[in-house]
Image 1 (tube, helix red, strand yellow):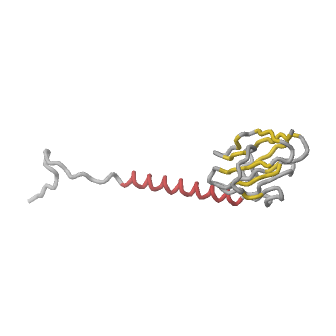
Image 2: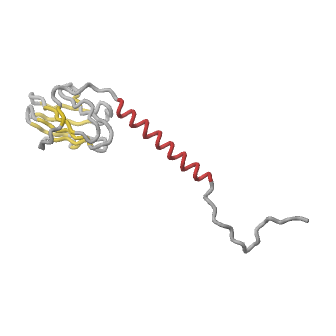
Image 3: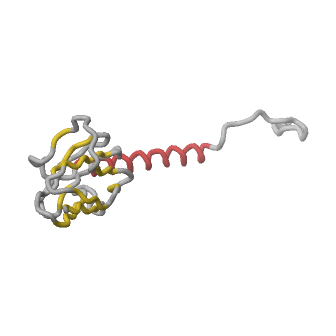
Length: 146
């Protein structure tokens, strides 16, 4: 006697979970994204830069008209004009650490963690001073002292 275990043509099967291949791919994608994020955060926070110079200070909450914002891995505005010796606030709105460091060594924030504000003092000698983020060196800007 033979037993037929096949389903009758009109019988409905209960719903089943999606194939495990899709779950595995999704999990693999989450793992890849997580590892990439961990590597990028480690690289951002472990970059070496000089310590804060004597011209930097944590924010006291004072509002400054001379301000630079770091957001989306860019300085805004990329060029700012200030008076000699002006205090310039630098606010990091990214979630990773950045620096704002003069290429001539005239000023630096040192490491500026995300969500923090520091102040730099502009040089007293008029001129054009370029700066960059020492951690993400493609991030550049200019302070014009006049």
